[in-house]
Length: 125
Image (tube, rainbow, N blue to C red; front, side, top):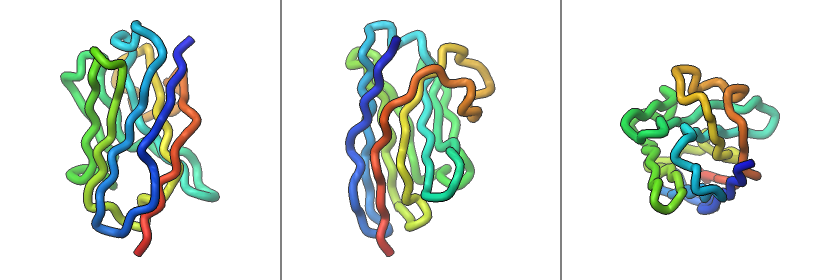
């Protein structure tokens, strides 16, 4: 069992930045690929970004490419999402997730084994 706890959400104006962090409970954090998803009111859960267990490869949704950066610190069991140039359409609850498969299906929410409770990000216009 892996427990994931997100932090760093909040209210920011359009064009601003936020940094989300996700802390994992287990020292085996390094065996999991990690992802960030988001869910806006009335919408389904949407892939945002993912990083391989090695940290060597990262993937992004087209809507955030060039603005968001995912990173991981295996020594601290954390994964982060740096969000720049935020837009009102980025408003959502953001979820951190752990994936033991570490394969090319990183954008599929069903591939992930563990989820955090989510953190709210609100971008005002």
